[in-house]
Image (tube, rainbow, N blue to C red; front, side, top):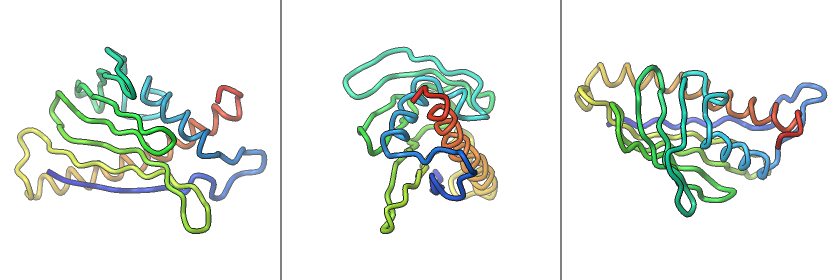
Length: 156
């Protein structure tokens, strides 16, 4: 089992004309991402909602070519938890909207996963976790970029 945590500032270094995102914008974007993550996560090629319940949903995904099932839990305006329930990687991923002491918004992405066939604490697991950390940092920034695009386009 391995854990990784990364966060990115949401409104740092905005280009001229780029909208600053609010907590509400980011929350609505995370809900859209839960519904269909393909536009938000470059390594995801498939995402389909298979069921719904109060404050959440179930979905099937294909991530890096691997089919998985997730239970999604919504904590409105704060975070979304993605609990892997089937597939080669089991565990939990969290997307959380944080606010720094200066009031700046950040999107935190954390995961604790266990990959089938990989020994805990092994060099293989460490190398895999390091690669995933880099990939997930790209996914966090891609999520912020997609939310900003949707705000700019008037979708959010």
